[in-house]
Length: 203
Image: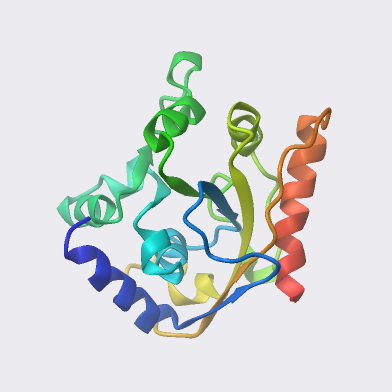
């Protein structure tokens, strides 16, 4: 992590002004997967900046390679955040993003992921159905805590198609961890995980 990282954390707090709540969950450096609704390219930065510094140091956002590797500035930001870039156009069986994540985090790092896969339409507060990656991630690493996160107002701070954020207040709520339960089907787990994020909207 270079000197840009603390600057980015401070900048994210200035532009997004997040009020951060931990509900039935506390910040911890144990290995976790923070999974959140997704409405803005600023989402990974704001979640990352909302974590305490010791947790932030061992947490890596997952980001789309086609967006974050475009141009030196975005590449520099991604490197500064120690982000793990996923190539969405080259997902194959022998190049599974889940296997890449597991290999990269080892026994040290946590992840920030967005199971919707792409930004949703949050004007209505709706969250898209979750893709299966988070299911297979926890199936292969059942020791990881899955912490739901709900973000509010990010789509107004940096809307789709815009390049400059508009300073506004936002809200980041971390909820109680969940795990894949024994015998739970993929569809049931994904529905439960999505519901755990939605539930935080009204907290």
